Length: 511
Image 1 (cartoon, rainbow, N blue to C red):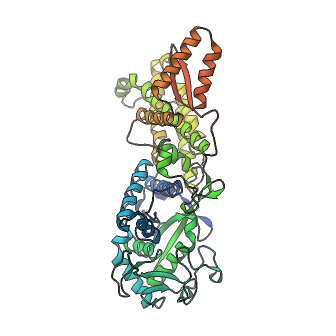
Image 2 (image 1 turned 90 degrees about the vertical axis):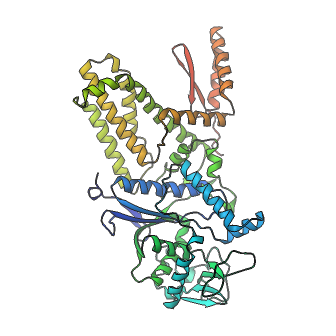
Image 3 (image 1 turned 60 degrees about the vertical axis):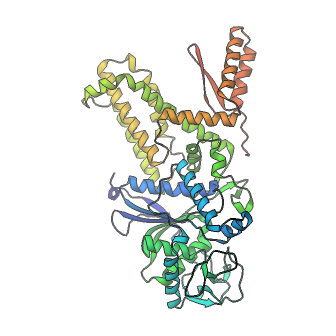
């Protein structure tokens, strides 16, 4: 459907209400999202932000918008310098390494590459120019090679976060400095210290403060005024509040129309964070779970809601996706004998009335959820599950149908597969692999979690077959239950026994 026919409502943090998206330039969207500080492997809290805004990016493209998506890397920062000093390596080498590792994780999670992925170290000229403009407007001041922003010169400071100026802290990444005119003033430029990376500036060698980078890069790649700015809920204050103050001070015609913030991932009811040492890295999770299962889990709640991490939730996501891909793989196999007949038919046969109804409900439900502030919670349930059930029920009936009736059913199944695949594509739950290849990858991850190999399963299956042959059904049941506890279900199909992943019967939901 064309963008003008679809009203996408997004929750605007600035106004604290859902608003219809009306782009500044019809048909085009400028989107800026704060990226990571690259000093370590990224955790699944970072993944949640990336997936949330990847879904927005994908859906905007699905609606027909031409999107310029900018997501930055902070590759110059106190944390990077501290970690590099501990490792005995150059700070920029360390940050470059973890930028690259982040991109590997994003690829695994099927996050589309943004239009631009700027790094702070590559945009010093833009940053210095913006600081000069802020000083010219008398909103910044220089003290011994440092440059501070004067929050007293920002009349609307605190509007986004609701933080009153008299209640604000000096900032999360800087200590209180007696040289400041107001304790809430924040650094635009930091004078160089020994053994730290630095760049030349009108105020002497140094490096930028944390907040100025996003103002400078959003203006450079989009403009002072653009459509959507996104980031984690923890960035509302001070980072986004300071961005607004800086950009407004430097540029007369500036502003962001929609501020979007994703909720945190929690573990044991606390926000997942490296500072709390309670995080799970993306790499750690995808070592034993398929990346698409992690992506599905990260979309299992509406993006603004907190999301509690548990192993059982990941298992549920993995099982749900396995069923989706298995059904679509069964459909591929079921349609294979009829490909010549479908080609010869050339679209002459009509879909069944039930098939049309299934597709209409699937598309309507999907669009209504997504248009309502990207509500991905339970997105593959409801009408989507009805479509999968219809596929499974119809495949078993094909051979018994009359030719004309069968052709209508085949056409319906082909169209339902297209509609189901489109939903998966917009949600980022497809790869370049076939359904069969994805299923194979998911089974390999199951074996890793179960700590058993294919040979081990084959041996247990043979033992079970022998037990059943000897009418030792207690042992047969024991073997089946042993594997079920590990997340492996045995299924007897004719004379053959096969296995597939399942929800472990005694999953530990606390890890």
